Amino acid sequence: MRGAKALFGAICAMAPAAAFAADMPASGAPPAAAKDQSKASECAGYGAGFFKLGDTGFCGRVGYDVMGFAAKDFASHDIGLVGQRLPSTVYAAGVPILYYYNKSFEAQTRDPYVGVDAQVNFVAMRQTDYGELIGYVNLRAAGQMENTGDGDLTYVSNNAVNGSVLQGLVDQAWVRLGGLEVGVQPSMFGFARWGYSITPGYSSLVNTPAVSYTYRIDNVAGSNNSVSASIALEDGSRRDMDDGVLSYYGATYRPDVVAQARFGSPNMLLHVGGALHEIHDVAAWNCCYSPDHTLWGAAATAGGEYRVKWSDVFGPAAGETYGRFLLQGAVARGAIGYLGIPFFATDYVADGDGDIHETTGYSAVASYEHLWTPTVKSSITYSIFRTSEASNTELLAPNEPMWFDVKVHGSLLQGGIEDMIQPGLTIGAEAGYTWTTATGNYAGASSAPLSVGFPNVAAYVRKFF
Amino acid sequence: MLRMLVLAGLAVGVSGAARAEPLQILSATLTQTNVHNYALIAPGAVSTEITVNQSGADNNTVVDQSGGINVAEVNQRAKRDNNSAITQDGAINIAAVTQQYNFGAILGATPGYTAQQTNIGFLSEFNSGGVSILALTGPGNTLISSFGRTH
View (cartoon, rainbow over the protein chains, first blue to last red):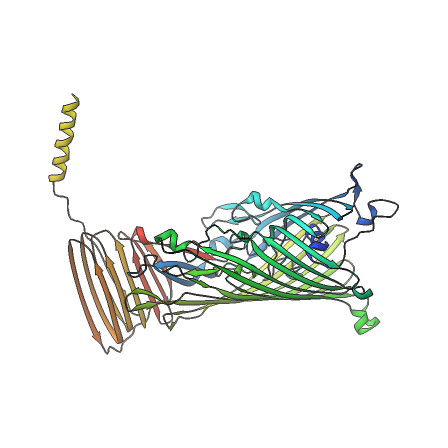
């Protein structure tokens, strides 16, 4: 989580592979996947590209999605954060402090860069007496060239999981029977998208090892509407936001508990979700044998997507144009990893006596996509976030109190256009602008706000099946 | 032969122990001129001579020295408050604190964060608005992290 790239390389493709998985019932999207298996061809009902897997009764499909891109990041400076445990004559673990400053990235962003995001997936499914049995694997390698700051060019992975490229390679791998799903799968917390832009808005879409169950009702009261409710036990380590000094996750013994409910109609999807995230801090223990503490962080989200055919609103003058809106927000306390924002705050701060002070924050995304023609579309996305990271009042020495409260907020505006020049082959371009501001308070004295802003541009070509 | 070697080793050891090592006291002078000044000095188990000069509305200094020889000198000029806490644990401990009040001049400081490794330890200083936090920490108690958005 902490190592995720923030710019174009961050999970570039909302690939058909991912979208395919996201539209499946157990991921919570009420619009049903094709289930009509009783046609002339056993597998045609599942969709294009499905074929029969021998005499197993399974239908399978192989897909791929490869994107190459070139991008330029114009950030000469950005907000850097430094955590430190100041020496204290009262607490062996010291007093936590967080600084912010204007950090130079001129060396890293001097040149444009290129990257690739390649995915290959396989799905197999069949009907059973207990419901539909589906197996799905999506392997993914995403990375980009990057200036190290020393003038060297190096390749970095954009989808490594806690530093492990191998774990990141297995993007998804799950088995589903009826509503029960086991394996590496999309978290039940995330909405269907982070906005319609290729680069991510401030929203959390994470694949994680999990066990989930979804109960779903289609055609509610004879309508075309459907509802679903899901609960999942997920690997919380992919959400941990710690720096090793202010906060340091020890072994956790409980998975994150994530719940979700959705309502879907032919042109609308509503989503609410919540998560409990265990914090087991050992920062103060590791350094100085202060007590380690455990508590639960929490996060909640709500979102909606609405699709419209503009001729239904404005009449024939609107032609055959379509649009869709997305609005999604999340709040978190001690579970900042659920906000889908850059690493501007740790989940919590461990005080000198081991007590935990949870960080709070929120994020939100508003996005619109317009389909000008069947092959040309454009999108605009605006995201915001805010974090508040603070410590309790600590003593550097008797009668020498110290505490901090650092707040970071920011926004991101993205606009893009994409053209499908032939089936399965698209080209596109996107531009964005990022604003971020940090403010602080130290033992009651306000520090000065620090603001940065920078644009970024990218162009890409994508081939998928 | 073995016995001779052991004796030779002892002779060298005694010789080494008897020879007086030059006394090394690491020194540093640190100055803060912002509105609210905090200085945290904890160099660890080395002999140090530290001078802290603070001039601001509020000055706070905490010194924790545990070397063989510990010398601390704190000079504070404040518009409102001066606070100093000095802890020394060594063979020779010397501390002097001078506190003066009603000083109107506050020079301010260049905003930003600087950090460097000195011969005493890790020296960092944060200045933003009216806040200045300076820390000098030895190798055993320097805990630093760095994070933010990647580029």
